[in-house]
Image 1 (cartoon, rainbow, N blue to C red):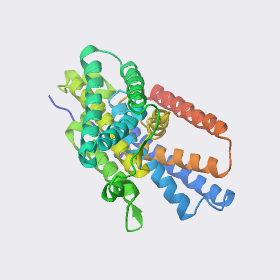
Image 2: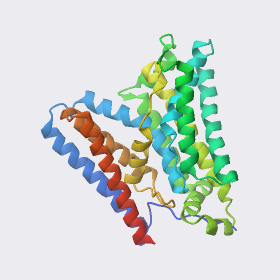
Image 3: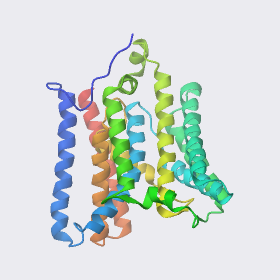
Image 4: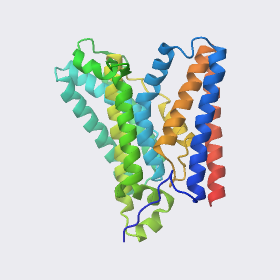
Length: 328
């Protein structure tokens, strides 16, 4: 028997759906307030250069946030996103330096990252290990491969063709192509998560895996696919980063997992699974990007920036835990 999961951000009298709407509305209010405060605190904040830099910063990371959000809803978590994103850059960059066409190299790189996700999904669904342990191991392995393949030095990809660099550096009209790609990914997966049967099963799997299995949902397949999808999106993001920077950096993405998880949880995704929205997670991403930009413009010490970001993550997890207790 197939069941359809309730939509996470719509619905009239459902208090859980209303809670999500309030959470997203609250995030929008906080972001608007930060914009208002920073417009007075720094004359550079509302400039086109800074707005564009902020948008470029959160757009590519936002692609990874989409994958992480869907995985969190299914009840999983992935600590390897930063390392896998860097590995995507290194694989594609190394292949290009060996004479492989950059488009072919990028396809091989994304396929490799997808295979890594399938590898993790296998250990979670078939061997029975927890996502945390498997992704932690893959995080270390992927980073080690990056450093081994490059000797710890960035790969300079100065001869990348202009049409490939256009992915990360070009614009269509006033909008950078990176932001357009980001919007397409967000809208596509937000629609699928709300409207398609396959993705709506993710909510039931994360809410109660056993009950979902009794209802006829192939929960192991759902978990396997969401784990694979997260790594595939990391690979896609890695290619965009490579095109944007014109290099492959083996140390790129250290700490990315914290930003991505924090953004998703701030936006309403539960670490216990079963709840979350793409829209909320992107609002969380924007909020963190605004905070980072504000701290930099106010010349706050980088050490304090780490403390503040860690405090935001702790606060988000605490709120998630509190809301989970209320729903239980």
